[in-house]
Length: 221
Image (tube, rainbow, N blue to C red; front, side, top):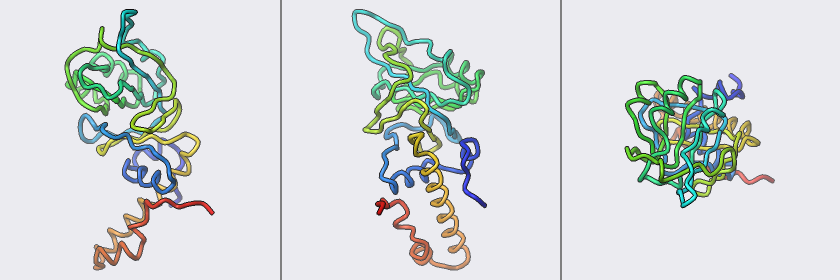
């Protein structure tokens, strides 16, 4: 079996855990700390569409209608600086995004109308859920610009992988390399499990297949 290369094929094969390990081995950041799945069983892989929010001031501003510009298959990444006191995503957005074929939404902040997202089957990852509106509290500051979350820089068009364990961003220019490394890590872990099933101890299987250094940074020579 050869390593998968297309994003669509990776959606059912690569976990955030193996992608995160691959990033570690390549010396790259990417894991988005504090952001979790709204419900279990969600998984997306797609190119990022970024949205940045900021607090309103005397000039006002709106929560924005950026959804009209998001292409099908994209993963929306919203940065509201991790705020949990007001939402930047709700039921209208979930139902519209689902209808338009958008892959999912990852929020460094808060969502609401969880029942509507669940009913639509729309995948969301966020820091928290809270019912208070973001209208008159925050506004869209930028669309399709670089976002930095917990030291991880994610640019429009980068690849975002999200599942039950959280979300991780990968630079588009390094995606093939990261995906291949993650694929190899998954294969090694499968071999270890099979070795244990066949009678090896866990310690023996891990030692034989180099488990403890899978994620260790491999410096180029």
